[in-house]
Image 1 (cartoon, protein in one colour):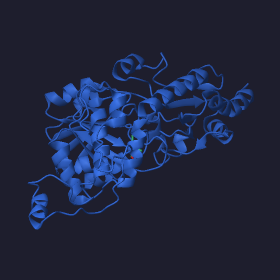
Image 2 (cartoon, rainbow, N blue to C red):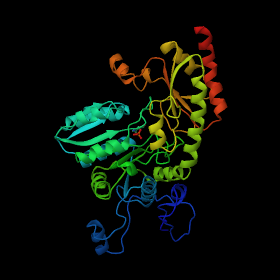
Image 3 (cartoon, protein in one colour):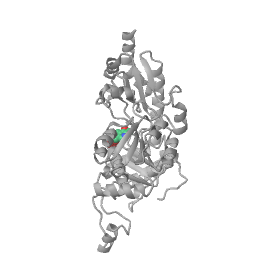
Image 4 (cartoon, protein in one colour):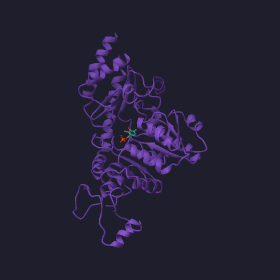
Length: 399
Ligand SMILES: *Cc1c(COP(=O)(O)O)cnc(C)c1O
C-alpha cells in the first residue's frame, strides 16, 4: 500500500512501509530467508548489477527489515533509512561510510559511553580525531572547528542530566561550514523530536530503547537523505555486514505501532515522578526537562513535543544515600538500560560513568548522590511509593 503523504504521525507509525503479499495478511510477515531466487540467470545478473531493483540477500535486502526502515524514515521525515544490528553499529556505519582518515569530529562531551570509546579508541586509530565540547555551549562548538572538521555529533537530551542543545542553531553552524550534523535521537524518539526538520542531516537510533520500548531486542538505524544514507551507509552495510535480523525488525515494527502512545505515557509518568521528587526534603536537585526550573525548559518546549522519560535526581548522603534508595526499591529494575515499559533505576557514578576519574565525573556533573530513572509505564503512584521507601528513611537519618 502506498502511504498517503497526508497521514499523521500515528497513522504512519501503524501503516507506513507495509507491502501486503498475495496471502492478504493484515499484520506484517517475518521473512526469515537468507537469500532470494530469480526467474532466470538474466534476472540474477540484473539484480546483482543493481540495474533491476529487488531482493538479493538478507545482509542488505530483506522485506521485513525494509518495512521497518521505511516506517522509521516516514516517522523521522527522512528519505532513506538503513537498519543495523545495534545502535553502536549505526554510529559505526555512519562514521565509516561518511568519514575518512584525517577528518575531524566535534562532539558533545555528554555522550553514551560506548560512543565515546568508539570515537576515542577506534576512530582515532584510523586517523579520525574527535574534540569534545559542552553540549549547551554554542561558542565552544564554533571554537572547536578546524579546516578538516566534517561532522558535528550530539545526543539531546543528554543522559543522565537531560541537557539539550538548540538543534536549529547547530544546524546553521553546520551549514555555514559545510559540515554534517548528526543527532542520536534515542532518548526522544521521533514521537517527541524530529531533528531532520530542525536542519540535522542524519539521525541515529538505538532501536533497543524506545523504538522497541519493551526491552526485547538489540538494533539500530541511520536515517537521512537518499545519497548519504541510501547509497553510502547502505554500501557500508552491504560490505561490512552489521545487519538487523528480520525477526528483530518485526519486533521493532510492532514497537513503532505504539510509539506515540507509549512516549506520551512515559512523559506523563516522568512528570509526576519529577514533581514529587522536587518537593522531597532528601532530594537536593531534580534534572527533568519538564520542570519550569530546568535551565532549558523554554527551549525544550520549542524543540520537543514532550519532555521524555528520563529523570535524574541528586539525593543527600552521597553514594550511601543513593545506594540506600536503590536497594530499598522492590518494583523498579536495578539496571542501566532505558526506554523500557519497566522503570529502571541506576547509580551513574558507579556504573555507566564508573570508569571515569573523579575529575572527569565532576566535569560531567555526575555526583555520588545522583540517581537516574528511566520512568516506565507502571502506575506513577507505585513508582513514587517505591522511591519513597528509601527516600523517607534517608530523610529521617539526615534530620
Ligand atoms: C543505548 C544507546 C546507544 C547504543 O545502542 P545499542 O543498541 O546498545 O548498541 C547509543 N546511543 C544512546 C543515546 C544510547 O542510549
